[in-house]
Amino acid sequence: MRRKMANRTRNFVIFSGLLICYLLVWTAIIYSMADGYKTYVSLKQRGEALVKEESALKERMDEIKKKTEMRRADSPFFVEMVAREKLKMAKKGEVIIKVVKDDKATN
Image (cartoon, rainbow, N blue to C red; front, side, top):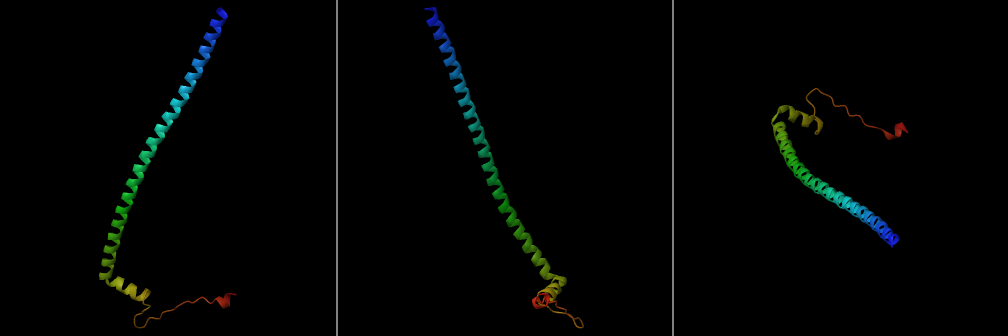
């Protein structure tokens, strides 16, 4: 009779230990999932905030570009620069030298 009680007690202790280990493992899994979900939500919110900030910065950059172009258009230096670079114009007495690459000569 004592042996049966000892076997039952031993089996109960083993079963209880396994049950406790099983519950601890599941608790750790659930806790890590909850922590991961919190991280996911915070990263998602940060991503949305960064997208909004990016669009605001793009709008601001476009406004600055427009203002810069308007300021440049009024200055005589800008008008001369456009005439020289884009329109290939020169003042009286100046010579424009244009360098052309000749692919046949290099081969």
